[in-house]
Length: 266
Image (tube, rainbow, N blue to C red; front, side):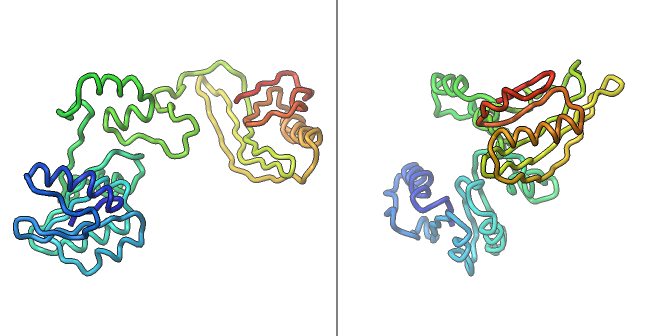
């Protein structure tokens, strides 16, 4: 059985190359099965979890999954149970995703505990790519994308606003800045939601950070009133001298806050 994200990718990524290498004409792109060297092959597209029904009841000697990180986990789990012929094997290829992906966490990270072989290839390992192509891709990709597509690493991406960020540019040196508080704000004149609160304090040459997730929704009011409330809550109550605001839209009233120092981060 050959499985891909959909039947089209199975044809393009696998069958066209495989049958061409063997010197045979490739099957029709609409076919769902064929015979090769006396063995029956099944072609399955798996765009979502409903695809599990397409392989239920099968008894397989071998399965190949193209772009395994893009198929639903329930289908993979069902596929494991279908390899019931003695000596059956499951083969798969993929590009790396985040380190918390189910394929990485449940299988590749447990390679010593499972009957599993795993090979990691770099861009430079592909003998069919020209040096010019590889050089251009290395220049174009940065941060997380470079780690994934050039180095073949399972680098973090989900939730990143700035896709060039990675742990190599995380600031981890001692700062001389004073104590400060950070408030995360989801701004809107119809509703203002305070989503988190962070306190940073230097102690004995080290900086300790406390983060508290909160939800505080203020009633609808004009910008001036919203800013007055923020000032009352975070500057008067906590005696804050520096106000750090993370906002996509900065109302003009923010520039008129009565505080000793104002810092705006975008």
